[in-house]
Image 1 (cartoon, rainbow, N blue to C red):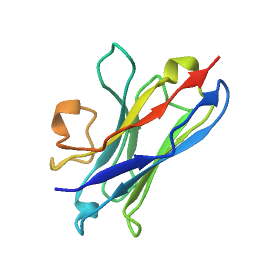
Image 2 (image 1 turned 90 degrees about the vertical axis):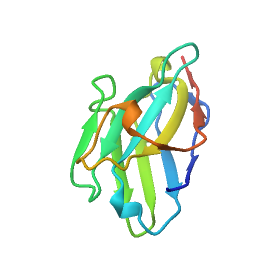
Image 3 (image 1 turned 135 degrees about the horizontal axis):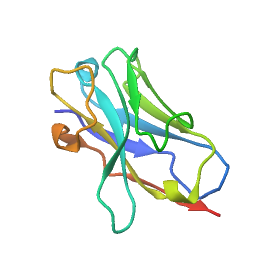
Image 4 (image 1 turned 120 degrees about the vertical axis):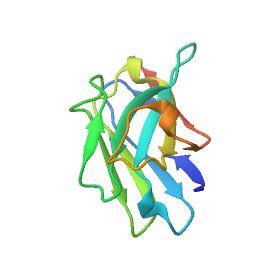
Length: 125
């Protein structure tokens, strides 16, 4: 198991940028592919981005491709989500997640069994 704590959320204007951070505890951080999900009010939690154990392979939802970048620093047990050109449609609670599945990464929410508490990102128009 790994404990995850997100930070960096906050109100931002449309067109602005924000970087979310996720701090992971545990000595086996490099064993986990990591991901960011988000959940808007009244909607299901959806995949945003994922990254492999080494950080060399990433994947994105079509809605954020070209605007968001996921990265990780294994020496610091950190995962980041750089969000640029934010839109009101990006408004959501953003969650960091880790999976123990033996895969490069996965966009399937059900594959993740370690979740942070979430950080809110409201984007004003």
